[in-house]
Image (cartoon, rainbow, N blue to C red):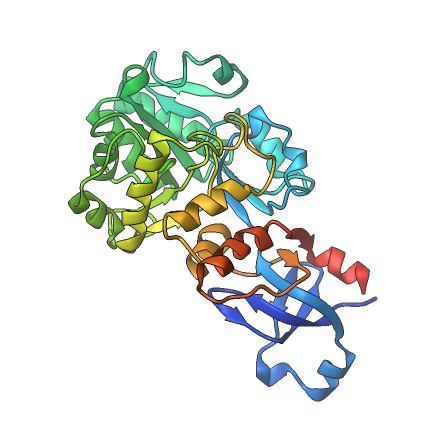
Length: 351
């Protein structure tokens, strides 16, 4: 029985461009052989795999309860973060190998009558309403028991009431004690500031209802020991503002994201998949919008890719032009759309 196979590849990206290289494939891992392990014999026996390997692509904001999740691997996604769906369904999907690698938050946590409890589409998801810190702790514990590693709270003053400061503090404190990052839907004047002040780890959307001042953006971009990962971050979700037509909300969000990225803030590629007319997979419009906001080249790949190569990667049959001129950047977004999700076991079978 074959325990491992080696491939010679033209290039790979893992926190930067490298290659050519030899990669070793085992049933549960794809790893690059260090130069010290790449002997003449292994190079001679390695089959050439033309093209590039990247860590798998992750959409950091989806709602699987509103789409067919079985379509996403074919659409180029190796991993997703679900930020609001029925936790029982999510636990089932997390064990399904025909669905991308899944991290999830479980139910939305909101105030009584708060967003999205009154939305028709929320019936297909899960919404938990809380009004006290004690209730919040109970609901967070339920999500963690259902397998959640993220916690989603909504702070949307444009569409109903929001939880109070004490309740929000209880959500954050207890979630952090259970090893979960807190993600907030922050919509309405002052809600992004409020989320950050409370120690929320991540914004589910780039703020779009107000232009954040530079001082707040600079603070959000710095290291922060209050947060689980030590840094605050934003999920991009630019294309939901106009679905390619752009407009005022898109421009406000893009300006905020441009300044956050320039200040050193961490940006995650995400689309809010399930909300409106978005492609079931990698979204070219979102990639272009990120580039237009200054998230380009290696920064774009950091926003999109998993931290490292693993058991599932993205394979692209050609090597991109990595020059930094505008045409090359445009080509990078288009090139990424040619990616195929492949697993270590699939690569072993093709040898």
